[in-house]
Image (cartoon, rainbow, N blue to C red; front, side, top):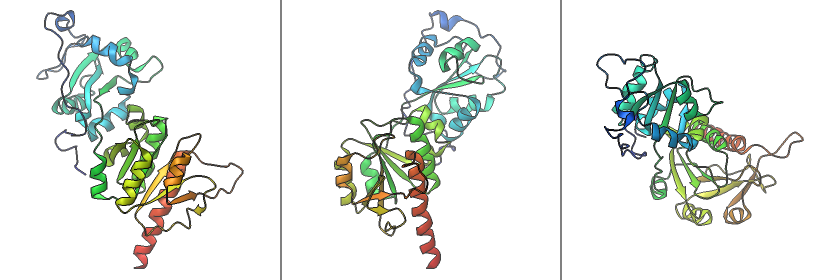
Length: 303
């Protein structure tokens, strides 16, 4: 994958810059609470207040906290539409400010109350927050053409934190691509980005409409489809990992839907040793994907 750290560009985000505030508006004439370092073209603390109010009502687009912001800026600075910095912390976040501006984003200053309104009163914003651009998924056809192996197909995972954890496990196990159902499934939001611990930037991510149809497309592309479900007739330890595989995971509560199971080549079970009957979806995916990676590595070593 392209390394987006080089030029601060990420083509998977909408880079149309937001319209600046009107020059005759009160926001454009206010002075910053703290003078910025010389040589930097910063906007005043209350510039774009209307956008801040809009963003605070759409928390799916807001990332906050020092480490998540620094991770996001380092990996994909062009993914940030507006970077909000606490007045007085300009020098502390000078590197992040420069990268965001280079990536086409805007930098604004805010006081403590403004950041709390943006991130939420219970959030630990630590003096910095960001409004993200909408994530742009790659076409499913591109993944099918490139044929990474394995692929993960996500259908019904509604908690973005679970999706983020799943992405982290998948990337750690060597997965290069994930396909996310458009309906009844979480999207790539700041919560998912934060939970993925940076894994999202290394994955090719597509969305699909009809999951049953997508399974057929995967089969036509040469994949064998394996749905993870308790009680499946194939143990993960007996699955033929020499095949090109697409691993399907379902919702947190109900698991993989029956219509999806019917279309899969294998229903794969993870044997449980204790009294709990199933695993969290991200944990189950991790167990399966690392087992596939382990067995494939063993085959390569034997050769």
